[in-house]
Length: 470
Ligand code: NAD
Ligand code: UGA
Image 1 (cartoon, rainbow, N blue to C red):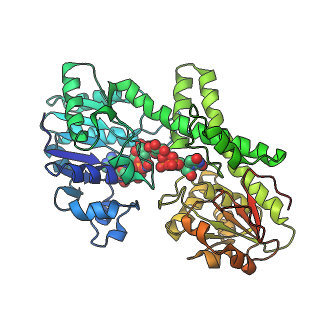
Image 2: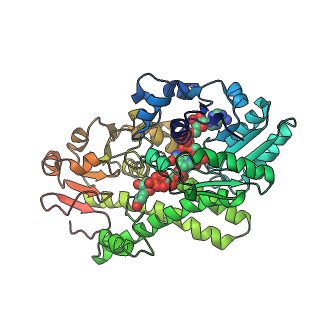
Image 3: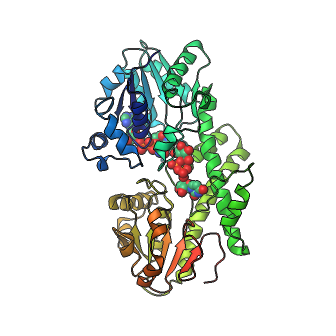
């Protein structure tokens, strides 16, 4: 089937950039992105492109080119669904907060709600594409919801997981390592797969478009994220060993990564991985393994999360040890709130957990991030504390020790230790020698990302995964 109209449900970090790129590469296709949040759609339609809700290098330029031509952001969910031949579901699938699978399984309520909307508003046959990351065998459930809600229309469900990383989303979408499309092994299923292949073929070489059965596609996405996160937890576990033994984790990463069987990627030791997906997808994998009675498999993958939590906590406790917190009103600056550079996303960022521990240890914290707005920083902490059922009085007490600055100079001034938690270039390039002069003793720069070029003798510079003698 030749496609001329696409709808995407979910205008977030995936829906927005992926649809912008499809619109750019396929000018003959009308692409409409809808969302249940009217406010978000209005922001996507902002004249001022700095206001669009996702910050990604290169995204504004694309939106400027195609918005209003063949890319539309709309609140009219019903007609956008009805007019489309293909509907992508790119809604959020967070970890469940209640009910069966609480704290582990993926919450599919947004996906099911989207399927019901699709079924309700469709007057002709549709191809429904799972773009969200989903547990293996979700397509079965989706098909059931679609066909039970609307018996007049035929739905073909495909799995087309997204592999973009935030901060590099546009380049990842332009030059994907692979595009994965899973479909039913029936004639209609394969026709639907081919329709989607035809779209990606416009800019992705055909040998990078992989078609599989639908369950392999769904599970490959969880496995990819689990394997990436596993490498980070592996290297982070060894950063602790380096600090005890005199080995240097950066030298280890390089030496190990040069083995072509291992490869150099995802071996940067850090204060712990963040982002909305690694933790939730691994927990989901753990839940699925348990569901299928594979307890050893579940425990194996769960360890990746446990190690990540250990690393975040270890970093915070190291800060407390380093500043030897025995005087009143000692303060620490947290440089970077986003979970990685070049994004305004702070979901599950290590900064949230490190700051939580510091504040609870009576330490004053000055935060600075170039992209994450002040309100998001505060709501990240409030959300964590409400999940811990902290009282309002305790929350206010903790917030009383939090200070958010608009630049790193002010954040660093007067603090005893500056901790780099996000690898923003500006922290790498700034003049640390003069900045430490504005700090209080012991004026430590604790590099949780190992971005400062070398062990600078002129500053008290401590690297993660390197023995220090302070
Ligand atoms: P997001 O929270 O940024 O965006 C999801 C959007 O869906 C929100 O704007 C929300 O309002 C909207 N939505 C939810 N239910 C809806 C409904 N019933 N009708 C209309 N709109 C609805 O999420 P995201 O980061 O874009 O992630 C989406 C999915 O893609 C998740 O499953 C995630 O695991 C996966 N994924 C994310 C990334 C990433 O880098 N963020 C990368 C690959 C895959
Ligand atoms: C990750 C995957 O890389 C994408 O392929 C996937 O599509 C996406 O998750 C998803 O499903 O959401 P993302 O989370 O955006 O992308 O960013 P990454 O570059 O993978 O970084 C994740 C976290 O790991 C960040 O906190 C980052 O700083 C950290 N990290 C990464 C390290 O600590 N060390 C590394 O060597 C690499």
